[in-house]
Length: 190
Image (tube, rainbow, N blue to C red; front, side, top):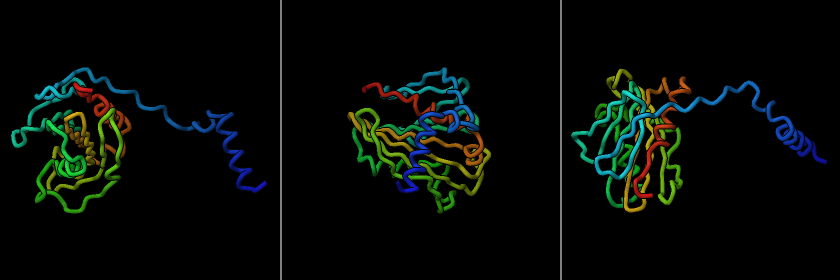
């Protein structure tokens, strides 16, 4: 028998028979935060939840958009009735930044981009990247932005999350909160 095959079998047996040894030294996953307040988009097309104390408001410059902020964490929703081309809409929504292009460094550092998938019966694209602003926004210059675009059932929705880069890197509770916020989005039409 080849040595690599023997090693592979030994590793598989260890994982199967002693799973606690594989998990040794790992921290328990962060508990899901309490999202106690439900909000509805002005169109009535979808709902989302936030913790108490978050400020939700329309964006005067974009009638299709609303924002929710709690401390340094932000969400922006851009909703359009009708099914837009989801790749072109995704590119447009990736440009939904905290400042205009003249106030942003041109180099963007991508974590990943255009990862496709399905949300129920809708098509989805997901990208995450770091943007550096010329001047601080909400007290920070570097922000991790994640853009998720969902198209289908006669609707198009982009959800952008904004988290200071250093907070994202060092705070598992923040990452758990962002995941919970995204998971709370519910379409009225399944």
